[in-house]
Structures are given as C-alpha cells and as structure tokens.
Amino acid sequence: MRLMKFAVIVSTKDAAGMNIKERLLERFDFKENGEKFGHPSYFFENIELYTTDLESVDCEEYDKELDVDVVVFATKHQAASGVQSLSVHAPGNWGAAGLGGKEKTLCVAPSCLLKFALLKLKELNSEKELGYEVIQECTHHGPYMEKPVMFIEIGSEEKSWERKDAAEVIADTILHFCRSLIPSYPIAFGIGGLHHTPRFTSLMYKTDYCFGHVCPKYRLEDLDSALVKEAMEKSGAEKIFLEWKGLAGFKEKVTTLLDDMGLEYEKVK
Image (cartoon, rainbow, N blue to C red):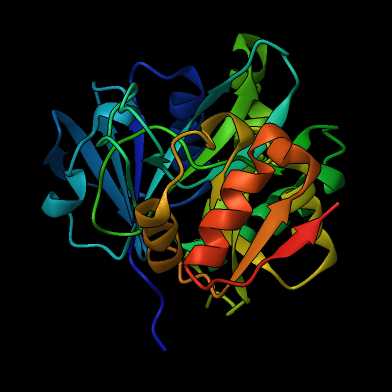
C-alpha cells in the first residue's frame, strides 16, 4: 500500500485556518511550489498546502484541480456555547444547501481517516493538557466535492481559533495521518442525536467502529431512502446505529424507513 496524497486548504477569511497554516509552515519543512487559488502553494512529502480567499464552504469542486486522494479543510468551528473543541467531520447537506454544497447531496466521507484523526486529536489534547472537547460532528455544509473530503477544526470562538497550542495539535495531527497507513475500521452510519454527536463519538472511543456520515436529530425531517442509500455508499458503511433518545419524535419515521429498505440497525442508548 502507498501513502495517500493530501491537499490541505485554508481560507484567509478563517482565523483558525491561518493559524494552522502558520504552524504547519513553522513546524515542518514545506517548500514553496508556485501559485494556486491566488496564493503561494507549498508541498512537504505527500502534503500540498493551499490558501484561498473564499470561505471553505464555498470552495466548490476545488478537488477537480488537485491531483490528490483526499482534501482536508483546516478551519474554525463556531458555536454559541463557546466550548473549546477540536473536531472532525465530513461535509454534505441533508436538506437545503444553506452553506455551500448541493441540496440533499453528501460528499464522499473518508470514514476510517476521520476516526484515525479523532483518536490522534484526543491523544495530543491529553498530552498537552489543553482540556478541549474532542469530537466528531455530524455531516453538514459544503463544499461539494467528488473526492473524499473532511474538515478538521478548532472551536468555537475567536480566542480559541488564535491559540497557538491548539493549532499545533491540529498541525501535528494532519502530519500524523498524512504519514500513516490508515487502519480499516468497521464503518457505520449514525442517525439521530446532537450536532456534536456525543453518543457516536463515545462509541468510537469504546469500540472499533468509525462513522463517516451522521444525520443529526435536527435534520431527520429531511432524511429519506435516497439519502440513507447515499450516506451508506459514500461512507462505506455496513451498519446503522440509531441514537434512540436522539430520534425524538422521528422514531417511527426512521425505523419504518429502514425496515422498508430492508436495512438492519442497532439502538444506542
């Protein structure tokens, strides 16, 4: 097996992304390699580093211009709670395309890579005693891409985005997974629960399972058979977990949908 080629993309409009870029250039021997997307580009080993003036969610189909296996957006995560966090997730829209991407269309999720990155974030967060929450979020927002794509983020307010130690953890995690042969974990599709998927994240820490796509409770109204099929196919999932309490008033809709599709599922309580 060969190591995959990665493109890491940051936005000038994103304080956390620019912080992560600075740490990557500072800590590793990146070399300048011409210009792309209006800014100097860099390479180091199997990693290409790009900067754009677009918001990350608006970088539609950038993957078609890049000769890589996986696209990684290093960005901020914003939440009203202000909880300091390190997170990963796959992009895609269960309903309307409010923040980039295509309506009711998911991207290809690098499911095993998401868990591998999550575990490294958790390890480094503990080593550096940052005290951050380390999570995998649900599938949300754009951009739309056909190559496997993921987000790795610092949350969730300005003072967090600018912390050098948090950006160093992200940079070291990126280098770690880019230099690694990613393990093959059993892959699941998660349905229900909160945006920051506490039950599914906990399940990943306790078992071998990883999650590519997760449809949260607030998007269950949009979930249909086509999206279930797409989530399974674009993540490689062979199992479905339901966060039972997190289905709220959609229990009957979801179970009937899956039963009609002939799909088995397991309840997580």
